[in-house]
Image (cartoon, rainbow, N blue to C red):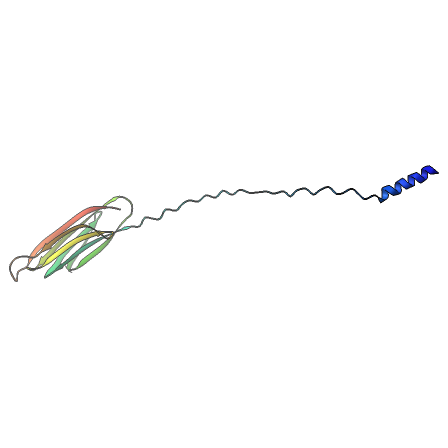
Length: 151
């Protein structure tokens, strides 16, 4: 009888024993995603330039004809009193652009005219014209200038 009692005792000890500890949890899986970021530095747009043709003066003077051009595109105006001004847009393309201004006028004895051209606010050319003769007479004359600017 000893053997069955020993088996029973052994069986009861095994049944009362605590279960083995659980296995440690698996470490979390970390994933990373690389995103390529490409940045392009934006270059500011080039602004067009301004060419301003001017005729000012004093005394008895009438502009009979004003003819001006930019890159061969000719414009014409007539019978104009002083002052006269025309603003032209020059493309900002880095290329040379030619311009010309021709004025014919009728002027009294003491009349004076000043013709000048500004490019982006800076003077690039100047000329003039005026009257003459005796009192009560008028004369006709002309004035012209031209040049080239880089766009």
